[in-house]
Image 1 (tube, each protein chain N blue to C red):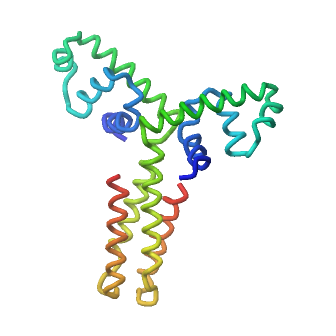
Image 2: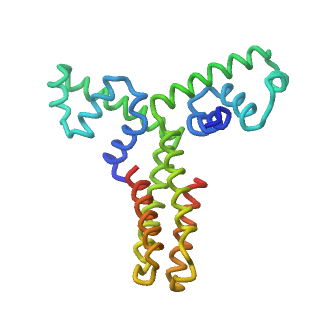
Image 3: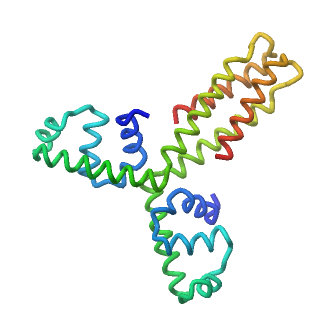
Length: 117
Length: 117
């Protein structure tokens, strides 16, 4: 997994356990693509202060995932749902009864919700 | 959700953020059905000590779920997977081509894994 994408997931899952300041900085950096210099200016702190906050917060997030593994658990479920969707798309709709086509459509929607969730 | 079942889920998700002693006590109580008196005897501490540890640990677990909501998130996914399984079971297999029956069986297995995960 790409490290930046991983950090957005870690932030999404565990961000509420960071300090408010750490969360604010990581949210600006990873979700809103602010550079360290832009964050420093925006929050009126030093660039080094921004860097230190990011470093500490990343360590906290990595430690949480190492202990709890919930991002891994969740991305595993999502991957399974994506595989299921592929199998749904392999079914030949022409051979289905109208009501079974409806059931399959509900199944597809449910799977899509799991993927999006 | 039944409170004891909820606590086994909270312990499963967030237990590694408790102290080792708290985790041990809650694991004995909620996963292995030990009474407070039995735990006190087993760990050679007072019954009041057991009670206090449980109380503090429950507060920690509840606070974690309030902040992160990951048990709620996962039980929601599981519930969706259970609904999908019901829809799969409504499809009339007799009308499916042999290979589509195989696809549907793969879908069923995938969904079951999400439910069991």
